[in-house]
Structures are given as structure tokens and as C-alpha cells.
Image 1 (cartoon, rainbow, N blue to C red):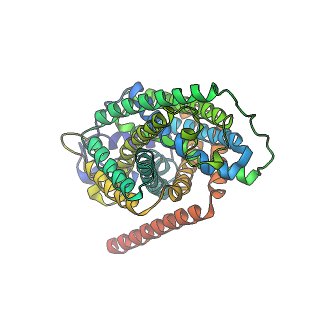
Image 2 (image 1 turned 120 degrees about the horizontal axis):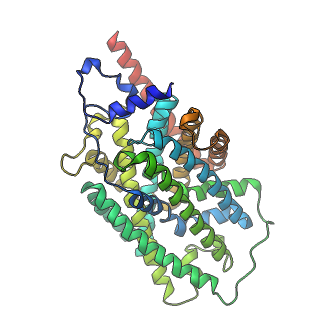
Length: 445
């Protein structure tokens, strides 16, 4: 598809209609509906970076080490490096696309514009199901650290967190960014304390040699660790609310990811100097050798989980908004609040679904499911970036190829139950869309 034509389409889609309906482009070609108001551009570079960091440096840094270490053994750090490399390829592909298509929806829009509406639908659906699972994981992690040991109370507290943060998002994106900044600051302060305690431990052990691991185990660990890196997409999905998006979004994505990679590498190295994460349930809390430190770590984990949950709700709401505008989700989800200018119907629906999940699922079961959906989402982002012409490119196509291959490899090496369930849900969604399209075509004929 010619790049100039694609660019004109999304520009028309972000404006209120000035032409009669019969003169407007076909609905499937629009990244945003002309019958719905656009979101307000209120976020600057700092806000965008904070939202990205808050989405990545969340519950993952406290929860993902155990399953990853169980899969990789002594190859945990190697899995972390692989996950970081794949995340970097995905991030630059997303940044390159977001500079050209700075509207809500992220890869849902990029896939539609560069590859076709079916690829866009697949990306949007993978994002929604994967990140909805992530919301449940964040809420459950918050409750686990806040009230350890009492399952029914944890579930009720997780539900309360979902309701409270959905209410914050409902009041507007500037409140989301402001609260995220506070939560990220608290989380980083706690992690700084943890790092100091771990690196000043009087009797550190040697980093384990690569002996009790396998290629498959390292790749599976990388796929699980990717769960902790995937938050940079939140900046792209909120592209319709960022000021100077062509300049701000690429910079914010790159800065946020590099900050997160640095934090995770430091935490991983410091943690392995003290204990084997595969043998514990709360590695950071148990690794700190000070009586006062464990409550501090628990508070930090709870705040980090809340920060990630807050940003997740915002990002999923924007993707659902974009999909509803193109009739890939029910049209009532495309409503934008006349006062707060947020997709309030989409966020309320998300809160209901996540609330059900936190009452019926467990933390361990949703991480692999979330990673599978998000890896497929980024595979489509890399394929979309590969098709961009030279005048839109910021990085060579080899980066897109490496990102695409990395996403597919990590997805298929995840625990098979997570992969099968997520793939089945995607297949059902594609089948339903095909049947709806078929009925629409028969009605028109």
C-alpha cells in the first residue's frame, strides 16, 4: 500500500468529518472513526516515558524470576538478555510505525495499514486477550504481596484494586500519568534499596555456570521474562494523546525500554549473587538480608503492581477503542467521554472482565498466556515495520526480521498449555469475524 495514501487516511480519521458520509473513505480503511471525537493530546515526553517505565518495571520484576529460573536453571541471565534483545527489536519497530501513525490502537492500526485488516484484527485481539490476562496478573501480584497467605482476602483486594484504578483512568489520562509517576518513583526507590542490600551482602555466592540448562529452557525463560518487558507498547497505543507524536513516541519508547533493561539486568545479577530464584516463592523479599527490608520489598511490589495495572487499563482501553471504531469490537466500546475524553465504555468493560479473572484464576496460569498473545502482537508489528518505505524508516529491515523471528521462536517455546489456549482463542475470534463478514456480504448482495 502506498505510504502517502496510508498517511492521508489516518490524518482524515483523526479529524471530525467535513464531508458527507458518502464521500468518506470505506470504514475498513480508517484507523479511527470519523463519527467519533478524537482524544486530547496532553502527554509530553516525560509523561510518556513514565507510563512506559511504569508498565515495564511493575510486578514482573518481583514475580517473573521464579518461573523463568525454573525453566532456564543457570541460564537465567542468558534468557534475560535474549528477552531484552527481542524487546529492543520490537520497540524500534513500534517506534518507527508510531511516528507515521500516531493514533490510538498501536499494532492494531499498523497491521491494518501495512498488511491488511485481518492482520490488524489479529494483532488487536492478541493484545486485548494478552494484556487483559496481564491486568489480572498485576492485580493478583499486588494482593499477594499486600496480604500474604489469605487467598479469599487477596482476591477481594485484587478486585478492589481493579475497580479503584479503573475509576482513576475514567477521570482522564493526565490523572493516569500523574499517579503512574508517583507509583514509579516509589517502585524505583524500593528497587534501589534492594540493589544496595543485595550488592553489599557480606557473603555473595558465585554466579552459576551454564551447566544445568538447555536451549529450550533458556528460550522458554526468555519468553516468560518477555512478560516483564512488554509495557513499552503502552506508549504507542496511547499515540492519539501524545503531543508532537512523530518526535515524542519514538524517543519515549527507546528511553523507557533502555531504563527497564538496565534495571532488570542489575536486579538479575544481584539476585543470583545471593540465592537461586527457582527455590523460592518471593525471591526479592527473601534475598534481602535485613529484618526491616522484607516489608519494604512487599510495599514496593504492591506499588509496582498498581502502577503496571494502571497503565495496562489505559492501553487496553485505547486498543479496544480503535477496534470498535472499525467494527472489530462492539460499536458502543468506541464511545469517548464528553468531559474526560477517555474511552470510558471500553475501560468499564475491561474492569468487569478483569474483575471476573481475579476471582477465578491464579497468577501462575496467566503469565505464559499473556506472553504468548503479546509476542504474536509484536510479530505483526515487526512484519508491518518491514513493509515501510525508505522515507519512513529509522532502522534497517534486518532489525524487523530479527524481531519477527524472535517473537515466533519465544512464543512456540512457552509452556504448551498457555500457547494452545491463547491460539485457540485467536482462532475462534478469527472464525467469528469471518462468519460476520460472510453474513454482511450476503445481506448486501
